[in-house]
Image 1 (spheres, rainbow, N blue to C red):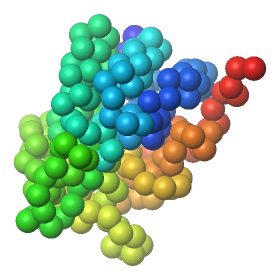
Image 2 (image 1 turned 90 degrees about the horizontal axis):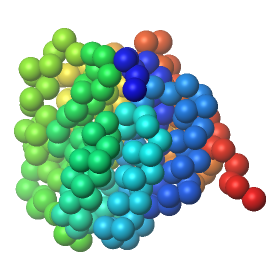
Image 3 (image 1 turned 135 degrees about the vertical axis):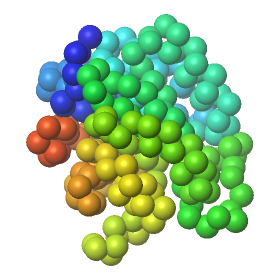
Image 4 (image 1 turned 90 degrees about the vertical axis):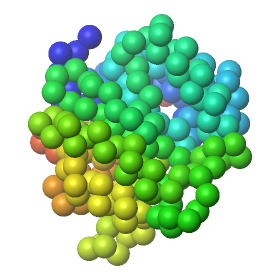
Length: 233
């Protein structure tokens, strides 16, 4: 197991595809990744078997892994049960939906999956889809006030807004990024993108089905695209 984290392989939307995830992990290892981060959708239909297969594949790779569910990973109870089961067998993989976990070295991974909406009156939803009012993300992650001396990596199902570039997203999540100054933010969204938000590198990792993922260097605060292993004949 790694003693520190410098290079993180960033992927999005495996949608329960075990073979796709295996190829992603093989390439991550070949590229020298110290850890893996995934943002949902983790499943294709929210079935327990999909989560179990995906998380077992993560564990079999032997890399520290951190993940959050996407908006379609509902009902949330199935995800939570399979994450609980998998993390007993593979204690180095961690779901960080609304919480945090320590990576090797002085790094804390924290996250909020699903869709985060800024309107405070929107009803939270965890049965048909995953949707949370932004105040809940603020509340769940306030524990990070106690971890000011740690490097941080955020995993967000919703991208933070960037007023300077006129890019849509959650303004509350942008405030959280500016408050806790993570070194790296992985967020959901279409396409591949790298942008600085204050002192944080925000990376949108596209979709694993595109055949690509992102590699981020925490020390240099840089990210680049990488290709998946070709499918077995």
